[in-house]
Image (cartoon, rainbow, N blue to C red; front, side):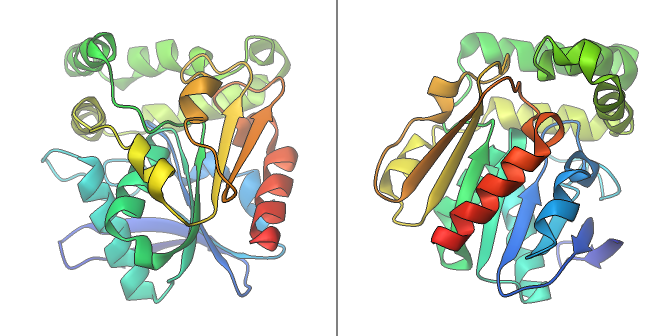
Length: 264
């Protein structure tokens, strides 16, 4: 069910909520996504858990403030929502951009967390080539709008074989992407470009951590996800998956999340 929450910073945060249970799972989508990215995962997780999936600022049905969408601002939005809804402690899982936000949240609001995870994401910052690509993407969106940008982006998100075998999922990702407000995408590109290295958050935390990587991820290679080891850290390499495990292999991902939470 899609709901809206008015935050004290003026942001209207749209979110989906399903299920019930002692543990609350919060799912953060990736860039040019929305809570609809989790459309296959939410029904599986909500059988046993309360699931909250917000639209991050600048995405989906949430507000699009014309200011830098830093990872810290995304984290502050979530903290305000968690506080207002009385959700803490939450079990936070972030996909790609959502993973960058998850690390910012874990660094600043660890007391609100029971555990957290990165799904096809990394603690590393952008290198110079990646920063240049962010700027190139922002320029493309300013000049040509969302459709050409999303049309070029989405095929890279899936394992190559899935472009033919999962046409509905690929089309869904495109439809979600083109709904992103251009200024929201541009401000988010700037925020991702300027984010700091947060690999130390993974190394230093004592919270349970789940790291998920796609074997065929063309955006973030597994070695950039698996940057920490320890008794509190579980790693999952998804065979055959690209950057969109929640659409490419939702049953496997849901099973692993539920197992991770039951073990912790």
